[in-house]
Image (cartoon, rainbow, N blue to C red; front, side, top):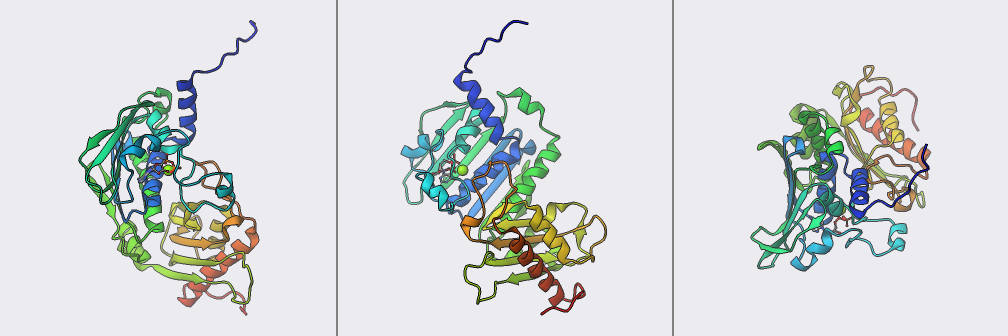
Length: 349
Ligand code: ADP
Ligand code: MG
């Protein structure tokens, strides 16, 4: 065997390898774009996808917008308006994004156009990035807010493209992502469209039950009961500040865990501890391999949960996991007991 000849990869290759880490599939693009819209304070976010997002993805919002002279920075690597330095990270990040890499990365593996007009500005502008090549900023007629359009995702990374699943499967994943944000933000009108047909549209009236009705339909919405838990007022610095949301009647279930949605400090997360706590609360009232619907918001002190994890990973760990688990179980159990949906197994006090 010949000794290896070690060479440094060229910029473009490095860029595309890194992109594959963040942007795995159309749903990951949708996630990043919605997060940007929410961080921009949007009250309306309209998502549309063509062919499961493989041919086109568009996210339009009515947020703060990006001034024309900032468009280039918006698509540049490690450029963000959301944190200044490492200290900001340690204090807990209040926005969904902060790495400043999403637009840069998406632009590396697609044809990305960002078009924006800050509210009140006379005119808008747009910028296009094609496979990492950043074009000039051009004037563009557009409504107030921002539209990000992603065409031909992975056109220049055939290996990644080959790895995509059927269109229906890719769209399902997009639907899951958009649903997750729609439920987490009942005060934002979120809509989703696939190949020109509306999948759902929430009203954005601030009512969680109305958002559930829009995404899951009447049968599910009517089977949901309110969860509202607060720590004992005598506790100083409680490890859990609150648990709220909706959970379903034990007979309104599905065969996958997908509809058991948990949010920590507003961020969609998967945590086996949370899921188990919810299931335990049903105390054996669920049929085998059936999972309830849940939309549960858990509030913990920001420093007790790490958000600086890999962008694609949703799994979180808590400093005070047993306390979080107990609070969630108690919260759900109380809600179900109050509505006579489970029987009390042990005297409570
Ligand atoms: P991050 O969200 O981590 O800051 P992004 O690459 O996703 O990084 O976005 C870069 C910057 O572009 C953001 O910090 C923000 O200033 C701006 N931006 C992106 N999308 C929007 C949007 N929809 N509305 C307003 N500003 C946006
Ligand atoms: Mg972002």
